[in-house]
Length: 281
Figure 1 (tube, rainbow, N blue to C red):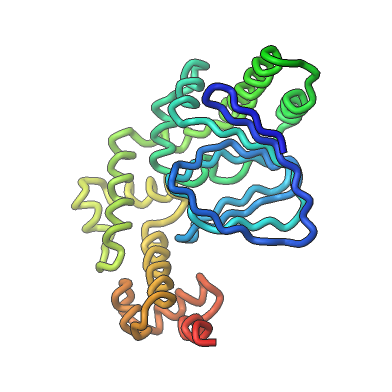
Figure 2: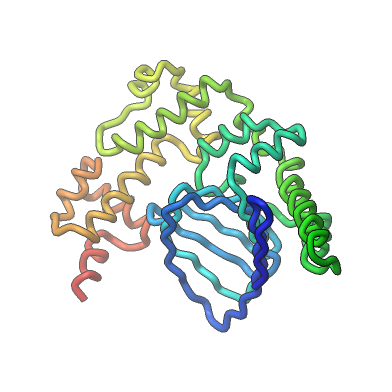
């Protein structure tokens, strides 16, 4: 493993020799912000609330997680380059190169966990930059400056050609702020009976705009997002309480136990009763 700290940037290159797939539980109290290049191998992250980040071999992702708690899955040997950099630092740098700091910051506020919807393929030019960064022949302060410049080139290359805020730019800042408040409202009130018409009226937004903007900004429909919140809450209660399954369904926002069982089966590939029984083995 090679790790180098230059000002506020930490560059870490690792080669993992993995003989068999394994899982690694993590729990970070501080923000996890990094640009991860999965040069060889792959990595999968599943958060405690079922958010996921998948980075296949030859791809990269910009990761932004306020509190990283979950499980990492590794299936094969890896070569990976991680670039850790504070959010304010990366925003200032991208802004100085002509990208919109405001749009990128709004995007981070809307989409925690991963910046790009899907991991992006490492380009030939990025492969060259990575090789130059790892295999240079320079020494001392000149080496640090060379690595810093190549690292900034990599960071810029990840954002400049990807049109990362094109979807967000379709919607006015006022609309995006309203959608962020609505998402927070759903996170806190998913157990209640929720209707799109009432939510739109409460937040002063057109119902069609609510449906379309929510799906584009958060890559899910309002209905499906609420359903996921409910079933995840129910799963937590199944694992950590002695409540009856029907009571758990009702408390989590499901009117009927049989509907809860169907949704739970789709999400966790087993019935709630099977999850409960597994705890008693």
